[in-house]
Length: 400
Image (cartoon, rainbow, N blue to C red; front, side):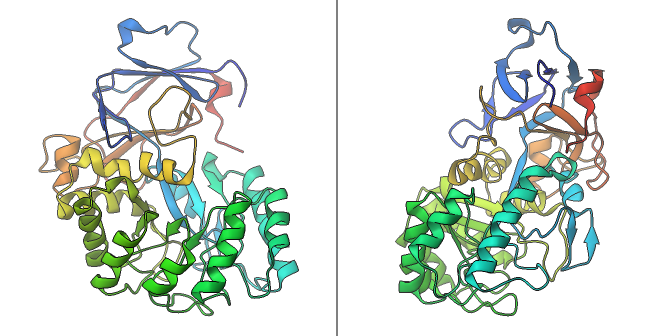
């Protein structure tokens, strides 16, 4: 992105912050300079001079870009699991601006020897750092741990730039004590961990129950509602009560169990732990609208105000994942989704429509202060769309 780029988004009708403590902000304008939010407030109070791009939100809603906490990328914007090109671009059209790899497990011929798995993890971290499909930020390079790994292996991975572990349990390490030792080594070197939860999903994975999850003490309880097969309710409750790690609910899991996990977190007054993912691409396909569907489902069936449900896929995930996005705050990444209620929704407002179970219509996607898409090709059409008043050529780039 070129320097000295200034984006102004004004005439915002509803500003969703991503913060559970204050999910709606009393503001109608956001300013971003060189990809970071520089000001949030009322248009008449802010310095809008020198803007290289100006968007009139036209009274619609602006939210932080959505974060998919659980994906399985492989190479660029191609997935061998469905032999599909463009799945990441399609997810951008579903409001997603950031994705977190839970392991590049679908790579054909994925190496399972220690030298090979480290090499692939480092390569994956590099190629997703260097190549952002349609501008979407992919945090990749998540090795699946295998038996025989030692502390030195985790130190080498961290020194090479790897910051994530793939789902514990997808490889040969399935015992709680062995997983705990490796998760601790990873944490020592700043590598965040996720553990598979529930029944097996792909060849080589196994059944991971509450005892293994609690013993491993990974940072993220991966797909607590199963990917796809969920644990019994009593075990899900035990996980919610027995640790303070992130409670990840995914699209490709058991929906009833996801709602049970949500209600348990609310009962414990720990909604801040709830984060969302798709667990795609998977056998069930690619889910470009998966995060929006999760927000709508949890709001409508989980009796969560829609503005709070959006926080599960933005601020909650950003904080649990230690990201610089997901919140409308000065200094955070200028990643935005501009949306409105879908045409002919029974809901009279965006929030009411989502709480009734409808998906919003997306009118524009912005990443790092750069307009990436206008009207989404995947969501239902919005009632009202934003308008580009000015867009300098340097700010119109589609990513790299």
